[in-house]
Length: 140
Image (tube, rainbow, N blue to C red; front, side, top):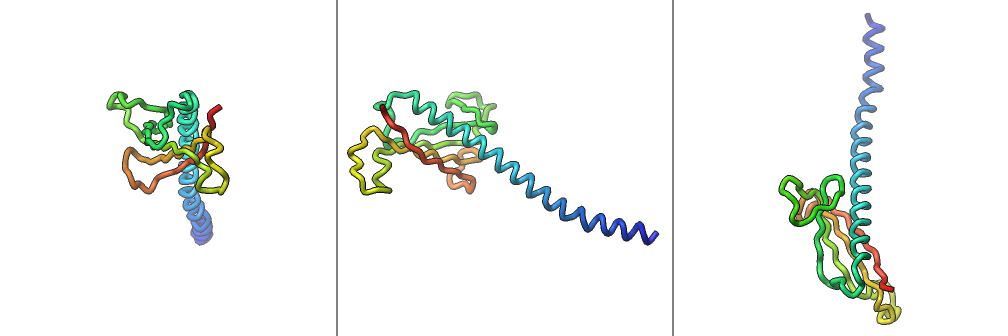
């Protein structure tokens, strides 16, 4: 009988840390899934911007995009059953090199900066879950 108690003590001593690792693994998996969804949503937004003529891009304006939990884009007239999980605020700026270099930034009028700020869940501004992508678009 004592052998069984000792064996159970050893097994429980080994299993409890494994259960603690399980929560860390699940959180890492969730973060990885969100990063993948955000990368695909950013790719969709950049593809949409590249599909527009360069002169029609609204410099200085913020455009909002909505995505569901799986990263599929939603239109503003989507049915109420499709709730947006991720919101993306896209801001386009002129001369993105002005802040990081002393080059003559007027020499590159065909270069725009794009800042994509993802916020989730839903449209809660100031939410601790936020990710920012910065990139550039070149007109040619």
